[in-house]
Image (cartoon, rainbow over all chains, first blue to last red; front, top):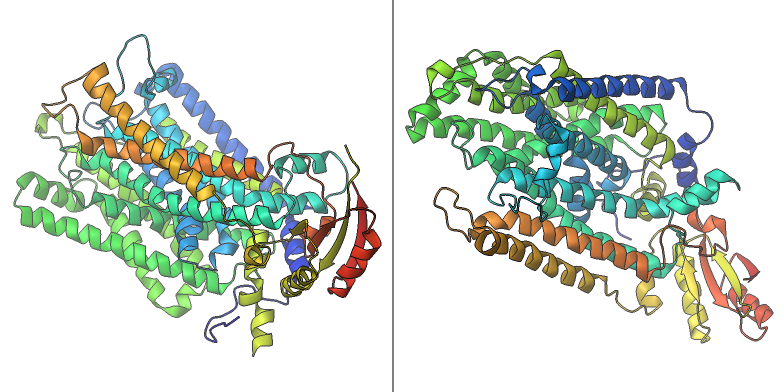
Length: 455
Length: 171
């Protein structure tokens, strides 16, 4: 098979097929380390605190939050949009990069997609909690109820329900179908016992038959084809929550592409933050290499620059439109009482990703780790700026208000981190973090061993 | 159930596997199954596998999802309970698109996944027989079905086709 001489190996070290199995199975064997137990304990504490905060919200009511009549959306919706955004990287990697035949996706798609699923779960909590009374959640489902009234299909908030639940379901199906061959691999490494029975059950009786593989591939390709527009649709619909309203600062047609690229931008940043730690912690340095880092950072530059251009376009259009409300909204964002949030957003999202133009930085794990955290912070502030600064100056100056979160809102946010990391720690312990079969299928064209032999 | 028996031989490289299959096919030996640790490209043409009907199933289910999604919304707002939202038309087609799209994707995905599982007889609790646990690691296995006690013959054929380890399995 022809391999371009300028392409660097995706898998370093002299790997054979069985060495790949061994390396990826290794972190699942033996006793988990102190790092794992410590991390899981911290995550569970955070989760517990979050559950307590949710309890307070439900018990005492939504008045425990810092919201008022003017600012009806605060941290809750900020966190919702932020988590959904984080949840865009996984399916982007496994669906869109599959369609583009990017081989480097094989080392990161599994864990990135797990992060997607966990992040969407965290996101989904917020609209539900935001209702204040959880049992009201069933009002969003269209079913023939005793009131005879249907849901409003013209509302973007309802589209959100459909978009997010479909996204979660399809991502979960896609992820699990990719997992069954690898669960089969783990099952066959285990000795007889309960654990083997559990993995046998989870592997759906996978045999590796060529017929199954052929169907599996055909299914994966079409699922990817379906998931690709789905990824783009989810944040488009989330952006409709804002764009279809009449609030200056929200009412912009630029939102869908701007939100989608922002989502991929923040999702990749989160994947990088976690993968840089994980690869070190469980010795996967040969599988997640500088080549992967560079590819991912290139996507960060692309999407980050789209976000940057979107910010500037928004400012320009606000001025060019001649609408005073629009102009005020944007001047107020930059120089009003929330100026600090705006400038944190601008610095983290527009300036820091541009550092990746320098090859040394984009190939450095340490630098990428730091920048990815900046991007995460910046993207959180983007949502905060869009939501809070647009709302806090109402059309009626008598309604003007300021917003700061209470400990309950902060607690729920911390709780979602707890949920996310609890699931992530369990995932890296009990499931293969890297798609074993997929890595093996690119081993012949992309491993260091093969490329050396070719020369 | 009648006793079945199989003969298996394994290879350590996908290229050797394809050569081996071709050698066996030249002698008109029917191959019961080929099992590999990862999808080997070109195997489907060598084994003359029928093209999967999964794409068709996915398309039909997706079309149904679209029809149900759009039809339901249209029915709700024109027949069941027409509501006037700011003077907009009852049948506001553009605002029905998101939900229609999501249902299209959802139903197609379900059809694909369940179609795959059912046609492959995979699922929770499926009790398929694993002849060699190393298949999910690094072995590429050919399975031949024994008929009329020709096990030794088939083993010899596999060996001459370059298989590394040959074995007889009673089921």
